[in-house]
Image 1 (cartoon, rainbow, N blue to C red):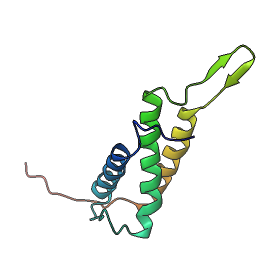
Image 2 (cartoon, rainbow, N blue to C red):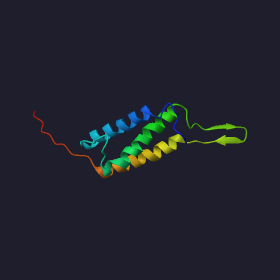
Image 3 (cartoon, rainbow, N blue to C red):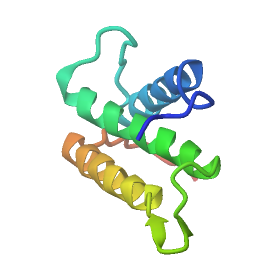
Image 4 (spheres, rainbow, N blue to C red):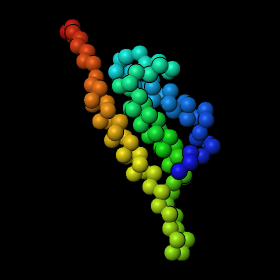
Length: 105
């Protein structure tokens, strides 16, 4: 389905940048907004889809409805779950740097 104008454009760019910052913090790596390394691309795309679909769901886009015998089921929540699972798998595959510290008592 098309992304509504209320979500597309600048808003979607903001979601993509938000996903990049999240991944940058998660991996503790520098991820450029213009030259994204291959290991990060799929996760960033999927995470941007999650953010976009969540906003569409909040705006009521993709809601199921019926008129008489005619019904439409645009299950946005199921698509969010699918993309989120892909993000989770990608993050697990990337791993996360371990930080060890010393505590003084």
